[in-house]
Length: 123
Length: 181
Image 1 (cartoon, rainbow over the protein chains, first blue to last red):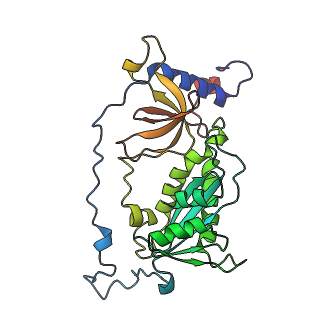
Image 2: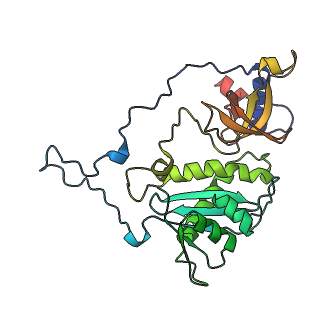
Image 3: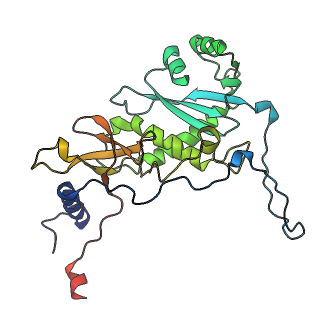
């Protein structure tokens, strides 16, 4: 066979490629492809319900959002249980924040569940 | 989009409440032993599910005591997948932090093994061209760079040239049977 001993073909294959790279890797060339942001309309200012050009043809293009007004502008946070591994930097917990309007979930690693740590994490 | 009210668990530290008061942000505490009023409880579930499935993608040699490095990418990817509540045509990430540019700040599966290119000026003339490392996330303040963790020095480096060595998708190998076919 093409690979040595009892190594699985997968493992051997990786070793070869890894070593090839170590000897051959070169600085990546620049300007291969433009990474300028494509011309995106600023969706924040966009009309949610633009008037249709053919009002009698399109009837099923509806976007709706159910927003509880009492929760608008609110955010919440809570701590997870201890992660089974303490990281080398000493982090054990994750402070999870939730932004209601944006539906955004934020995660910050914490070392201890003390007030100071949580306050720093929140900042 | 700074929130004006924070909802928190009943057992919240006084220090945090003082800090919120200083910034003139109101807070509301969930009733004792009533976790469902706190929306973050659901967010924790969602985040843990997302983070754990991301963790399974890591290379088998990725040191698990570096798990906290992977939180940043998990947060970005999770919020790119969630739609904003006030504008469902935007992602939660775009709503809060602006459009994410995949070309300018590329991403890869978390914890993938990489060979990081060592610049010719900083290596000996017969040294290997690359260092072993693990991809941990996009480096958002560099142009087309990725953050890599280097186990030999236990440090994080922003690298512009890396070669990804995937463990999950083996590189095709030609066998004798293929040759004879």
